[in-house]
Image (tube, rainbow over all chains, first blue to last red; front, side, top):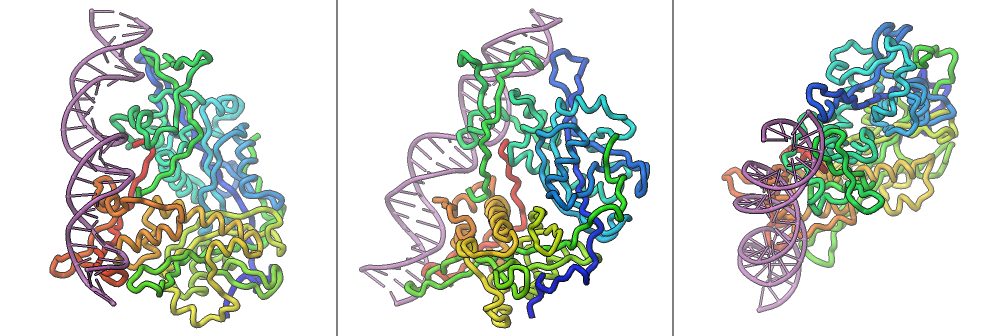
Length: 254
Length: 254
DNA sequence: ATAATAGTGTCTATCAGACAGTATACA
DNA sequence: TGTATACTGTCTGATAGACACTATTAT
């Protein structure tokens, strides 16, 4: 006899006590290195946390999130919560895993849907002033993992970090952390902020002049067709680039 | 004021009517090409479906699955259902997405957790005989997408297919469809069964002799240290290979 | 011998990686 | 002028891609 969902009747079974979503909101914070003038700022990956003010885990830091409504998808729930939390809507938001370990939530049987969001620093700027820093705060990832966190949120953050590290190297999500036009040095800094081990000697060459990878980014030209550059962070002006929208297709078999 | 899950109380909210899991079970079926002796069989990617015998979608084909218990994770539920369905436990089982569109299930508010399983043909062999073919059946992927399917299972299967196509080219999941020792031609056939567009002229060269990719597979040697080969599918014996367990690290930035 | 599949030799254009060197602008 | 950052020239060895060629076995 084959078992399947045909045997289901809602009355006979225990049902979940809610469908929460949790959101790991990443941003990259630039801090100016004032020692040297015209230097690229230091880039650091940070995570947004909220201090809980009621049971359970009262007083501990937790990921922002909320309960899915019957009338929405979990993606819509996550976007709604993200909007409430950061006041921004145009962000990279991505589902990455489900957490269903029995007992993970003292309030009952809660299967949590975990999202990660990548928010540009400038997008977050407005919000920061309007919020009490004791309730909502950005933490560098290294520090987050030392804090006592509510629920299984440490695991969620670790998993989210692995996910964006993998995607940073295999997709063009770096653009979520960059302005439309950026220099190669900025791109390099963003990648390193997410993947500290990343190091490429001939980075410019590979990303710009190799045929196999060409087409991911392109030089920005001005109205006259002349290459556009910026000397915001350097003595010599640096060529500006933009992502073309082309997504690379990677393969281990050729 | 910041909204978060602190405001939750189970009594005030509508809760889901269950936490189902659905499993897209893939296998690769080899059919001998009897016209030619000693020829590599034709490999075809197939999906296992179950014919529903009660409401809703009675009489339609659906993915196997079932309801998660309060005492288990969704992964445990999926593995339990997979064991009931196929009698095999040592298989690649992977969570790939959540489906929560309101109204997707006529029985109520059901947020479904979708898994994909990769089962070797030989692993499925025992089971096939024991099951009524009118209730459980393997379908080639092309045919599955033409059938009327229960729930949103067409979408699940399409998503699962994209996922294994991507992973087939970027990870070593091909091993789920292969015996421990295999020839390069078999590996090539498996990749093509999942990704029909895949074509590499110098496949052997790239997978075996290039330094950057070397280490993913290795030649099998016998007890005397001599290279081991097989002439099961060819006139001239072909070198046997095995996966080393090493997972390649891909990157678009070098 | 012929057929069928496995695998190698070899050539060219391109790429990776290293490192020295030049370019542009600020102080 | 020196300094800081942005690039470019150039060299060597490795790789991609094509295609002709040889190797091993069954019939």
